[in-house]
Length: 390
Image 1 (cartoon, rainbow, N blue to C red):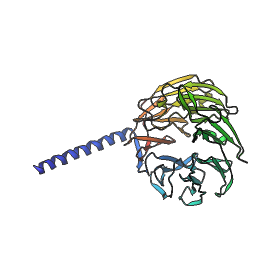
Image 2: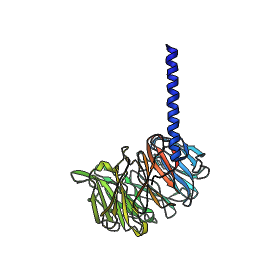
Image 3: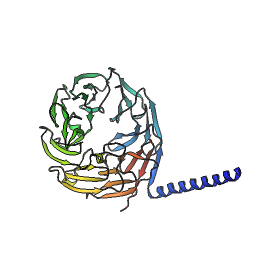
Image 4: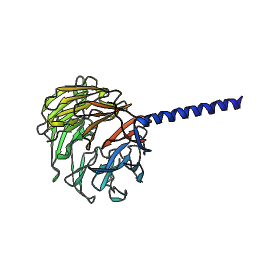
């Protein structure tokens, strides 16, 4: 009896394995998986290394790991790996020949892109302090921002040139910095309270405006606490478009902080993926003289006129969105990662849809020259040339 049961179990396993391999082969026929690799931890961050015209490497990190891997973007082969004394809560900062990484305790490492060898290391320990914003590069210097409000200016040799303190109090709490896209023309920080701080990079003098209420006090809108989630500066840095709780898209004049338009989102939970990742960080579209704002939500994409906030398009998604939009600088296209699909948006505001051929829960993506790199929630990495259904 036991031998018969074992034989049946063995046959069943073979059938399952065969079916699974057949499933993968069918996916691969439709969508070319160029390579796949293991990562370093859950909820990974992906960083392209190399020049704007030639991305050669992919750095894989995780907020839950103290090690990183750099893979060859074309082949997936490992170029180098390193283990550190701290974890990495934010996406590393890639420069021309170096990559800068700030750990969760405030240590900064500058590494050679090609080898991972240390160029310099900076550690200024302070009790109960840690970074709350990714390291910025501006005017040939690095700038870091910590929970206690310290803003540091660091030169190319890893020496602190200057420091100042920004006000980030928020009621009884400290407001954390939120992401601001397009701030490369200005050194600016935005926090949860809506406090916008513009910093003069030469002397660290700060001008601060409150976009929501006064002095960073908690403000209530629609019966709920109002909170800034992220924003994007337009090309000429004249306007800042924000996304807020309890579900607002609001545009401000960058110089004055005055509201130019505001739109209400029906369900605030749609601003986030099922894994609580912010989807609705505003993405600015500038195709063919068109100035628009793309807002990704869990079930749809809405495109607003950048000047007036008038809705121009509402595009439903074939499956739930899981990551903020990505932009491919070479093909000049916007991409959306969904739970079961990959979408490419063309200049006519049309989606081209591809079935997502990855094993595991998709979490984030990067795109370069139509090569899509998708990381799963568990940390597996896939490089794909998608095949679109017209």
